[in-house]
Each structure stands twice: as structure tokens, then as C-alpha cells.
Image 1 (cartoon, rainbow, N blue to C red):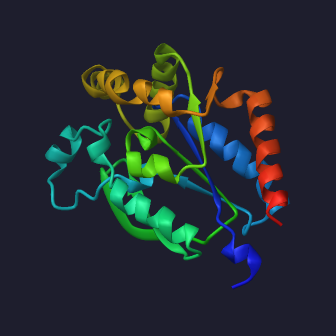
Image 2: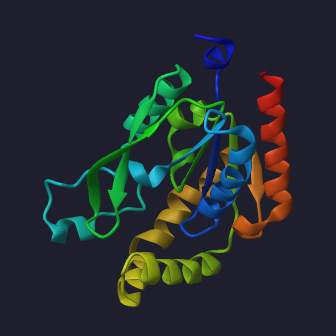
Length: 217
């Protein structure tokens, strides 16, 4: 192994409510830095990929699953994968289908990189995962804004009805936010307002990533 392979990666977690802008924020940073850092320099992982497989359950039960609870995620596998990447090993990341409410047969190979971005709703609720993160970012977006974005996203991209979206919001999304996500803000190193298009926040984190990358060379 060369020095680059031996260097411990920097893992940056971007956390917030569903439709808070965390995916846009993380993806924007990844897309803008990829041409500069290259595929060995930066990668991105979605916590949603680690929703538990529900192949053994009928569709009626899958629909009733509380996807806004930490137990909906296989955090043990995610932690193992982050440990593998830190050790210089490639991983096979699961893929999840929102329409069938379970994982697909395909996986995505993710190779070790100097910077690992990971985004999701429950990343800071797990102590093991928290200890893996070098920088923890929390997207502090008002819930009414999140709901509007969620309705647009889930009707257009996931084929859901407005009734199913609002029912889920009232039954699980909102109460789980106050029980798990909002309290986890206390663990964040950086709190970002104004959503995923906050250019100042994007540029500041990009500058930090550049500093970390080039200081390790």
C-alpha cells in the first residue's frame, strides 16, 4: 500500500429531516469537487441505501413499516462498511427501491477515498456511527418547508399520492423528527440554515475539504 492508501479518510456526515436539503447539499459538494479531487479523492453514500431488506414481508406489511425510526436502517452494516473503507477495502453498497419498499438485487461498488460524504436522517442517533464521523453537519430547515418539498418529491419521483404522504408525515415523520432527529442536532459540529442551496455553507465546507485533502498529501 502507498501512503495515500494508508491515510485515514475524512468522513463527513450531513444530517437533517426528510427533504431538509441534505441530499442536495451533499450531492452539490460531491459534484463540484469530483472533477478536482477525482474518484480516488471523494465518494458519497446515502443512508437510505441501508434501509433493511423486507423481502420476507408482504407489500401490506412493508407499507406499514416506520421508515422514520432508527430501527428501519441496518446501521450495523453501514458501520462495518465505513470501517472497511477506513481500512482501505472496497464495499458493495446496497440499493433500495422506494416503490417496492425493499432492497434490489444490485449493489454499487464504492472504493476507498480520501473524503467520504454520507447523508441521511438518522446518522447521528447511533453512537457507533457518530464515532466514525470526523465532521457532523446538521441541516436546520423548518418542518413546513420540508413537508412542501417532500410532497413535490414523493409525488413526482416515487409515485406516491398526497394522502399517503400526509398520512405518513402525521403518523411517523413529524413525531419521529421530534423524538430522534431534532435532538441529534446537539451532536452536530456545524448547523446550516436556508437548505441545500446555501452557497456560503457549500463553499466553506468545500474549502475545508480541500484543506484536509491537500494537507494529507
